[in-house]
Image 1 (spheres, rainbow, N blue to C red):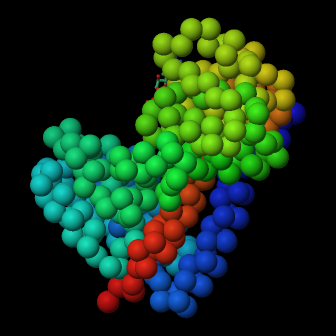
Image 2: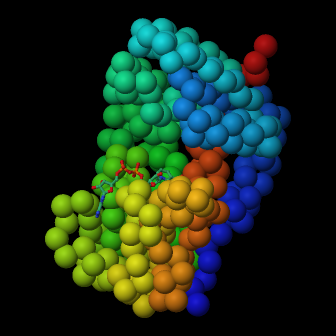
Length: 286
Ligand code: NAD
């Protein structure tokens, strides 16, 4: 049976460490503060934003929420971001995606000060991830690296296969594995012989958004399997992109869904916010 890589446990540990760091920083006059902007009333986005606010409260991080109507214009949103860019009590700015169709995601992400870009989606931060000289790592891939560390398997020299090539998960994930000397193959919807490629992986990261897509017969004996997918079935049950029951019989270590990658994403957002506070030397809100 595979070792279960519990994101709940690892994230609790990381948040505990961060809590201590936040309070130490306050003694030095540095106050972490996160501004979260949500536009419209997407229920999933609402849940994510609430979880982020809750994590800030737990850690003693100041947070502000801007819940804007779905009718908000691009200019209004940019105006708010520019104000927060200049606000000395705000270390990090996060715009919850997706945005309504009439707003350009690209323009919005580019308007965030890269030093306050705790999601690491600004092109400057994306570029820094390519070169390996980065301050902020996108939260989900950063959390996955922590879970791989938890498995006890070193990435160096391993065959790593990432299924999915999104800008948020797949692409930055492949870079982080490469920086740790993994031999990386990125697979996607047009990949030929996917099963054969997946089965070659010592470390397999799956981020495609298709329930139970990766089955036990696609996994190498003893592999580390990271399931990023979050899919809600008709009976409301949450499942990943990996068929957990089949996979855990073959894998050496595996993440559950829920309780695997999800909680790590928020912990890494908190980590980026604390880092941003140090970079920006954020002051107390008055
Ligand atoms: P996306 O929809 O942007 O991209 C999906 C990727 O999967 C694409 O690159 C596509 O080429 C690939 N793909 C689709 N069908 C495929 C197939 N049949 N074979 C191989 N590749 C295929 O996805 P995303 O934003 O990276 O999200 C992926 C999943 O991860 C979703 O379920 C999402 O909800 C979840 N997610 C979870 C977290 C978390 O914190 N746990 C964070 C981000 C995304």
